[in-house]
Length: 298
Image (cartoon, rainbow, N blue to C red; front, side):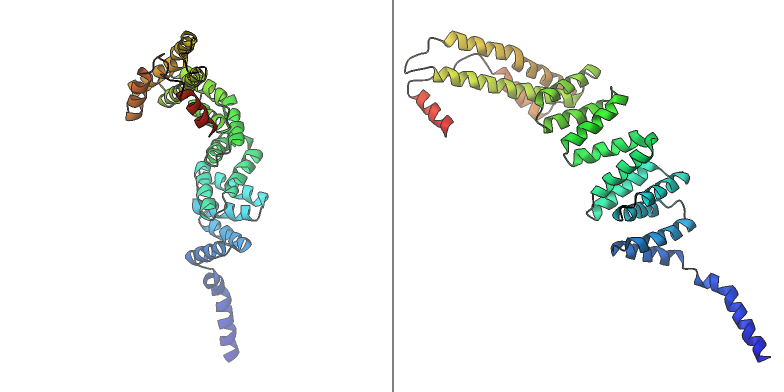
């Protein structure tokens, strides 16, 4: 009789063990989070698989799993989780956004780029989606070369997309290619003549360029004086009128258009300043010219 009872208890335990032995979801989630915080990536991944079997549509688990896989530099695992999330009908945008936030929070922003480039390589049909996120990432990093590369890829498919053109213009400016940036901004106005940002950019560009040219003419005029009034005054004034009719006129035009869209203090001040510019030459004596030279040398 005793043996029968012992055998019965053993059999009952064997039947009930899977139920009692299965780790509760919240416990598994907590342990997975602990492994992630402690950078125990493989242990965390083992639990993420368990968690996804129970709740296959929880986006946060896919995000954590992708980042843990990226920390292990395991491209195969990354793509397995990406594909698994897609099979559940989850948004790739949400996955990318989550990976971006998490990689920043743990101080490894390069993981985000790694994932985007991998998805772009392995799933070409998502190239545009990945490129959009890469464009934002490279702009945030102020990486002019890579921003230009991605912007050109996107513009090859959608050449009239103004946001891509703006990204390209900003990257060109960052790279120091001001003239090319100006041409891209002009192409934006060909698509939308009332684009506020493009008008502000071009107005500022021509205002600065024009002012620098006017200042240069004044300096050359003062340098040409040797204690007496320069006889070349008319030619210098002609140069200044040419600047007023070109660069300054362009600046006033773009600022005026921008002000008609959305006026602000900056535009009001710039238009007022530009309207006061004339072809008048600076007054000087034989003392001022050497002083100007000395200041320039300092």
